[in-house]
Amino acid sequence: MDQAKRAALIAKIKAIGGSDEGDHEAVVGIEDFFEGNDDLGSIGANLPQHPGLARFREVLSSIRDRADVSDLVIAIWEVDDREGGDWPYAEKVYLATSEDDEAVEAWFQPLGPDEIWEVQPETLRPSPELEPGYRLLAVWWD
Image (cartoon, rainbow, N blue to C red; front, side, top):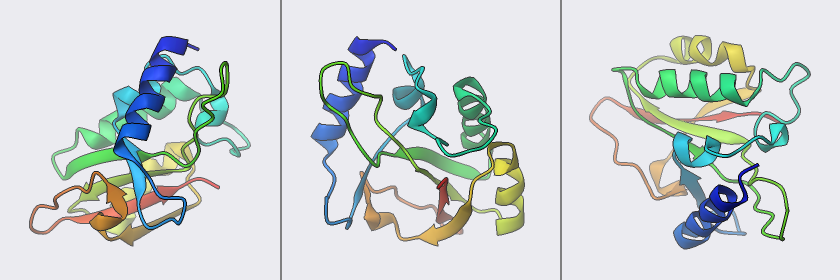
């Protein structure tokens, strides 16, 4: 694990802010989350067959880069800011898309999420602006 990149990510998360009350979540980009991260427990921790961080990054990046997706961000659930602690933990990603539920489920199938549902943008910090015809979906791993 790259401790300098971990520290930079934690500083970014703290600067964004989040709420212990759960009314909004701090989100970061794919590169921010995966650069220097070798902690399999940082995302998809309970998957019986974890595909690995490289595969997570590859699939998430390919989804983000689709023409019918305007953004994909990673929601930070927990931050262990102790010296030598774990990488920040994410249990969800959010994506803004114009596609239907079946298509989105197929995109994420290689990563085995537990649930996908629609959410309101103001629950995220920073909040994404949705293009006309787009909606914000949460993709969750238990």
